[in-house]
Length: 149
Image 1 (cartoon, rainbow, N blue to C red):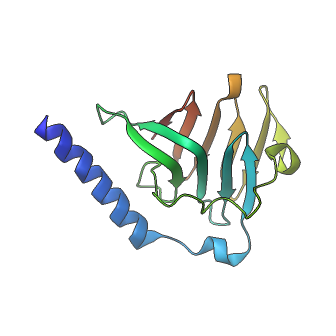
Image 2: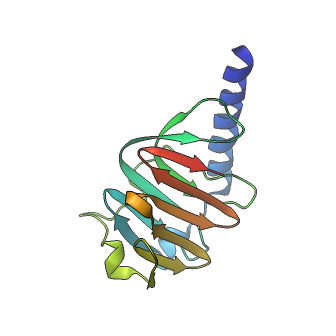
């Protein structure tokens, strides 16, 4: 059990430190696209950074951790770092809410709308699932559980 706790603390430390050290300024550049899918508000910056805020807490699962981690947001901002929570809810949401994905979509897939921008892609999936990929990383949410890599 101690080993699991150390591993979780280590992951949070690396994710938190890396996020602070390598956070970009793309949102300030004015080249960010905002959208929502259901109660999830997302943004894709001009450098391909993609992040989403969730209306309620979700659980994040990684293949290298035996436990689920609580999160209210998730971001892909580095190629070498898996999709991870930033623990700063609201950074991907415009005042008054984001426009619906259907209003900013770049295409329609089998299960719903998708948007491709700056090398990132977010799309609606089967039975209300939603996923995003960018920089060689991906995450998807279904039923309140996020699978991230």
